[in-house]
Length: 191
Image (cartoon, rainbow, N blue to C red; front, side, top):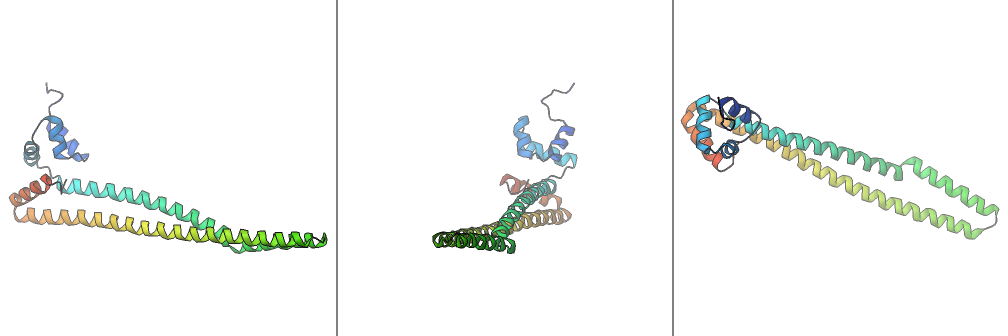
């Protein structure tokens, strides 16, 4: 019978496949990082590319969710902007003002006509300021979206670059590949 806290080959494979780092596995099972690495080599397990790809995929998924959220915010800002600057808005405001002025004129109340027109001018001014603030928010959201896409692309490109370099080094000298991966892993530059 195998003790429950013993790291079996199958358990090691499952942990690595789920993205757990070798150093974390070593700490969890009271082993050295070197011992876990040696077992991986003995079992023929390659972790660098898999972990790099998983990390890149995680970053990409987070960025896609952020982009979706930015898109929703952008739609709301654009809808609000359309409401305060669109053709129907202006027509409705002018219609209301003309109706109000006509009513005040029929009543012979020139003070009410002036107040109505001043109120309309104030409302349009406030709405214009709101529209400008909405435009500024949309610009900021677009900047953030551009940075998010750049980060997502950089993460994917870096993971692909790491994988290609390690594969080429491995094709030339598996021992050199092992030393490089081990050194980079110690510095936490690779998975």
